[in-house]
Image 1 (cartoon, one colour):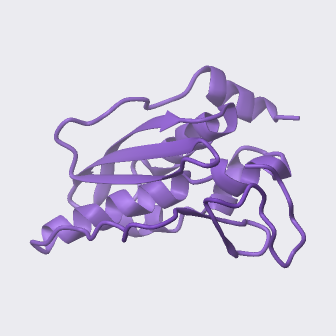
Image 2 (image 1 turned 45 degrees about the vertical axis):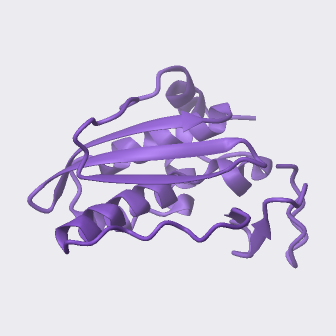
Image 3 (image 1 turned 60 degrees about the vertical axis):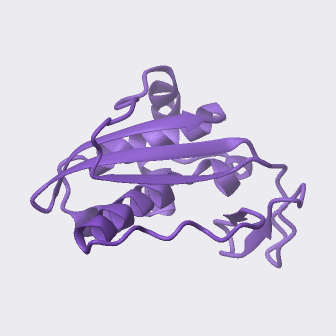
Length: 162
């Protein structure tokens, strides 16, 4: 069962779109679970002036992206880096356990956008992940699960379909 906040952000997502001249872009996802998120940020000084996202995924993934964008706008870069996947779940009044696994990648995408911005400020490009299987992190026990695995088979016993 989804909370009213999750349903509101799914039905009326905030900050959807792309920033053409974004200062930083962060992309995360796992094709095996179907959720792919891209975050675009505009930075003024040390403040996130604008945050937009494009998400391909389930309703929970869209709600997560919307909430992350709202949580981040107006924050300093350091404050935005403190947004965690767990704090997003709390802000949404929870997500079903089976939706924690990969639909809650929003904070990760935001962090990558900030890292991309910081890399550009230092005159270098952020390194792309090495080719290989994407992974999802289990929010229950913080273990990574390879893309090919149909279920999270981690030590915590959490086993939700991707």
